[in-house]
Image (cartoon, rainbow, N blue to C red; front, side, top):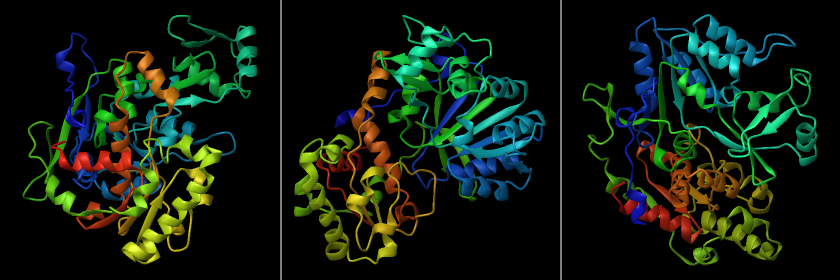
Length: 425
């Protein structure tokens, strides 16, 4: 697992291509003060600078609106029957407003929004990475109809889909396909799969970009930037003696105390782990196999045993996860209400949770992985799995420096975590 600790440095100065928009990856462990730094930064910024703050959750939107007292943030809202949140976002951009919104809305960016941002003086602060590459659901018959009718065409070399229609189908069920194609972010892949990639031109439209996350080097958005040859520089948050925050070069920071973090995590080691020795145990495909039906029943009993007999914490302090489709199979008395989605990020709503069960073995979507690798982008699935696991664990009270109990029945995921805790990453 030594490859877990290797990291490539990227700066826009190191390449011949000069990127107009500086992109800063604020890569610090959860609880280091990334959001606190961003609030301080926006409070102290010059009045002629405008901010677009994007976060996964509405409660974090509200937090920013209440905490940034030197400027008034607006949130896009639907305006009548035919004016949705995107329409309001565009109006707010035109007014040079400071805006706080969600990933879900920002992911719908179209060419008009990009041009409006470019015309302003906006800095983007992105709280956690987004899903920037996704499989687009267009059935093969509809795709063939659009292709045969000449509404779309596919570049033979790149797979990039172009929209050729003059607007006839703009207000039909193909409107979303039209929007994606017009921003040059829809690909035909493996003869059947359509992939949407978030418009890279969005990031280039801002005067400056800050992305707040942890372990960026193993996340999908990093692979996406590599795909488009985007340059970026790593930064880290440093808390000063006076309680304020500062951004420093990622490689100049003093490493956080990994030993102290390791001491806070009581990882279960016992017979309840015997079920997960296979490398693929508890992956999506494993749960879908009919022959594993009884093993899934055994896993459900093991989770219940762990909470009831091993850690003996009350239900309100228990937190668990699995893939969404498997919740009915794995839920049980004493922990069901403590479910937290395995891709949870950027939320403090579960910071009181003490005992955790992670019934997931994370791999990249195989089509997404193949899409990146086919474009020459190197993908590290163990690092990807580590990033997802760490983000989930840090929803619990460990983010406040308190000890937790952790049950990870997958040997692969458990090994990835213990190797990380023993490394200098």
